[in-house]
Image 1 (cartoon, rainbow, N blue to C red):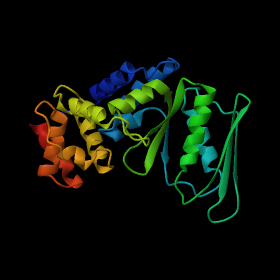
Image 2: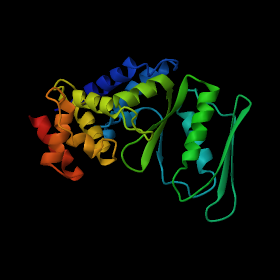
Image 3: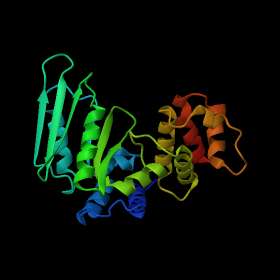
Image 4: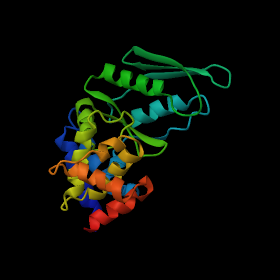
Length: 256
């Protein structure tokens, strides 16, 4: 049985080891650990309990939603992201032209796009990233992906976020630049029977496969004897064939 408090502490230590809390107020450490221990609803995904702004990506229906997201992120940024004002303007029509302007320390950051559908525009994420990084180069916008149409915005240490993506500590909307390193790290966690993050690693491995981060061709390579990651991947393809059965695969592995 996995101890949820120990899982929270182990995940917290991984964040701490990559510099997640550098340049953040002291309260960020205590509040993050408290959130990780308190939010048991996220089960095997402690990354979704990192303090930030949860959002539904399919939420753009009425004028004001982007302003609401910006203000919500500011309230959950430990004082790092502090817009003085936000202006959101929509044109008339089925696919309106939207312009959002964020003012920080007297400087304006603005972007304009055509809103196609009701999903949050990538242009909006780019605007948020530019505003955060330009006003404080140590920080960036993190977008954690639960694996569905929801998400979690976090204002975080830029170098630590890049390291977290490299190590596969959470799914992101940016994708993974070094797939092999990411997968190898997750499999190392999954393989460690003393880790309280084994099911967490299994969940992320499953998502990587489902969302195409792990290419089937990567799995079907002849794995070298010392490459445990490729062996596991090949076994998934050979024994289970379908993404829907991957959960059973991981359950079997954890029982072994």
